[in-house]
Each structure stands twice: as C-alpha cells, then as structure tokens.
Length: 561
Image 1 (cartoon, rainbow, N blue to C red):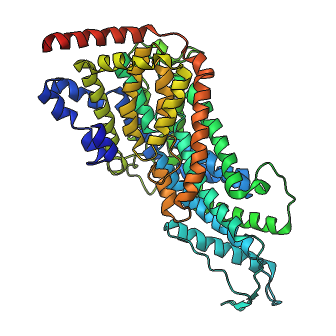
Image 2 (image 1 turned 135 degrees about the vertical axis):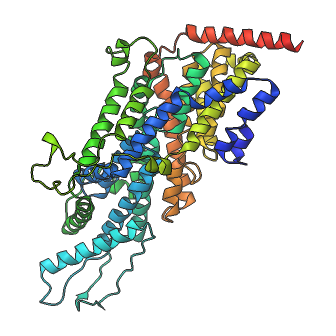
C-alpha cells in the first residue's frame, strides 16, 4: 500500500480500499472489523467540517471576507501582500486550502495587473476636451476589463501602448516607463505565491484545516484508545502560534525575495503623486469587486452565524483552562464531530432567504408576492458535487492499516527493532524526522505520507521511551510544509498553472521556507508544546498500549509455532 500511495499507480482512494480485500484473505483481521475503520469519528469530523466549507463557498462569504481585508490593509504592494495572506490563512483553517487558493488568486492577479498597469504608464492627455472625470472613467473601465479577464481565469497580457498611439476616443497618450521590468515581474510572482503559501500555513492551525491533521487525530485515537488528549482545542493551542510565526516568516521572506528590501515593510517611503494614483486605481478595482457582491444577504448572515457557532463549539468543548460544555455531558459521549454534524444538519434546514410568515415577514413587503418555500442554505446536490469523498476513503484506509499492524504484531516488532535509535537525543531525532518528511512530501501526497509515517513514529516513540506526541506532532505538521514544487500541493499547482511563476522561482523561495517552518516546529515542540502536552514524561496510556501490543504479538507468535 505504501508503494501504491507514493507512486500513485492507482488513485489514492482506490488504494485505500485494498485492506478490505487483503487483510481478510490473509487472516489478519475480520472484514467487519476492517469495515468499521472506514467511518470512524474522525471521518465524521471531516464530513461536518467540509459541509460547512461548501456552504461558505456557495454563498461567497469567503470572497467578501477577503475583499474586506484587502480594503482594510490598503493598496500599497507590501500591505497588499499581507492583505492577501491574512484571509488566505484564515479561510484555509476552516475550508479547503485548494478552494481558498482558487478563489483568491484571480483577485490577486486582477489587483496586481491593475497595479502594474498604473506603475508602467503615466498617462497624460493632450487634448483640451480631456478632463479629470474622463481620465477617472478610463481608469475604471480599464480595471473592469482586467477584472473580467481574470474572472474567466485566463492569462492576462497587458499590451503596452506605443508612444503617441491614437486611440478610439481620439486622445493622444504618452507612456513613460517608471518601474524596472524585473521589479514588476517580482510583484507578479510574490503576490501570487503568497496566496498559496499562506493557505498552506493556515491549514496547519486546526485539525480540520488539512488532511494530515485528520490522519494524525485518527491515528492517535486508534493507536492509543482516545487517551492521547488530542482534540480541536489542544491542537489549536499548540499549532496556531506555529501558523502565525510561519506566516510572518513567509511574509518577510517573500517581500525580501520578490519586492526587494527597499519596498519591504521595513522601509517607509514618501507618498508621491504616482503612488497615490496607483493606490487609487487599486482601491477602485477592489471596491468594484466588493460592490459586485451587493449587500450582505440573509444567506451569508446565516452561514456566518453557523460558521462562528461551529468554531466556538469546537474551541469550548474541552480545555485545560476552563470547564467546557463537553465536561457537562457523560465522559466520552461527545467529540469534535458532534457539533460539526449538528451544524451541518442545520445548514440543510435553515432557509437561504428570510421566511415569509409571522414576525419574520419582511417589513417592506418585498416577499409578499413570493409566498413559496425557501431554498435551504445547503442542498444535497451541491454537497455531492463538491464533496471530496476520496479523503474519507483515504482516511479509512490508513486506520484499517493501523488496525492490521496492531493485530498482526507488526507494531510490536517495529517498536522492538527501532530501539536502536535510543542513543540519539530526542531533539536531534525530531530534527532528522521533520527534515526528512518535509523533503519527501515535496513529491508525494502529504496525506499518504502522514498515513505511512505516523504509525511508525508512534511505535518508534514507544520503543525508545519517548512521549509519542513528541515525534508524531512535528512529523504530522512537516507533511504540510511543501513549498518548493508545483506538484507538492494543490495550491502550488494552481499558482503555477497561471504561468507567472517558474519552477526555479518556486524552488528558491520554497527551500528557505521549508527550512524556516521545520525550525519553527522544532522550536514549538521543545518549548510551549513540551510544557502543554507534558512531553517530559512517558504517559501511562502509551505504556498500556505497548503492553497490549506485546500480548498480541506473543499470541501471534504462539499461533505461528
């Protein structure tokens, strides 16, 4: 299975179905036991979280958030980059980083091309009939044309008008070069790459943000019988600071690498007339995009309420700092999947328009001529069209493989053989593992790598007497740090498909970010992670699991004899 996952000989979800055939035929596990692994609690957490993401995308709430942030930070390139990265990172915590990148990159390209068009030419009118209002309308129409092209996700090649070219409106236009072509090329590359990299960094912050995090949650629950204490809140407390640090490192590095130190956030410049013009043109384009969405609809408000409620329920279920709502219920009855499914069901019930009855009737009477039923916020056709069912099978295949390793005694064998690493200091071993995984995940699916490596790291930890989370958490997070190649992650592939960024550009920028993010994870696990998860002592639940594995392995050996 590992070879098939790495080489993708057949689709990854199809490979994940092999345990249903192989293990029963070999007598490793019963088919009914294997089947139960394909729809566990973690799979339902993914189902609920993904349905919420589909609702957010359906009603364009994510686009409104992104545009609001861009208008808030301002139109200067160094702040625009931050404006693209913040919503990308935030949205990818809750929805697919692929969907986040696909939505924000066209907006980024429209803004960048408008910015470059304004920087490249300084337009002056030579006829007396050309007044300031005409010039403003020309800028707006040009921004609208760029916006339309980007909406169709086509390559935008702005033709630089020759000097004194006669246009249809009979105005003479003179073009004066004010910016070096290399600088403009750097702006294009930096502004698009920042979206993909920010989406990757943001997905690490939550358990539902990316596939490897869900694999980690499922593997710890399966291997250690839900005793590891990993839930949405505990993961967020550890991973969110890592996301913030990696996001800021990414922001600084991309500015230095593509915008130059002189144009970075560390240098303040005076506002010239040309800069004010380009900022005004950029703001016009952003406001045009926002105005096209219209006022916030009833559906967007309802989806936002569901979104906020789900986040709050996840964060307040269990905590080391206060008594959560999960502590009120009988122990072990509720999990993170409970509010996810609850809010997902609610999306199919709550209407997308204001109900037309009793006190909820519209006061201005707009809905009086439309007394029929309202469409729900989410429908099943939309879910089946956008839902990533393959991830559910992929997660289940990993859990089935972990179960087979335990029942066959392979886990116990690995734990005993990996004791040769006992002489290596744990912190050095962690650096080696994270660096190796970050390199491998550049050319292989990060979900597949997490599925393969996390059970091995669990048994390695037990074998050398180290807290399992000390190696499993950094190993899991390292699978997401793939910045160097277009094939490494879907966000990278989306950015590369536009033709703005070369493989060499991505490799040069991504190599530094890979090293920085690996360093951040190792710093985190040895500082606040070490204290928060109490990694200095070997937990009892790992001892119990190790004992069970020994008993299973002993029974298998006796049966073989």
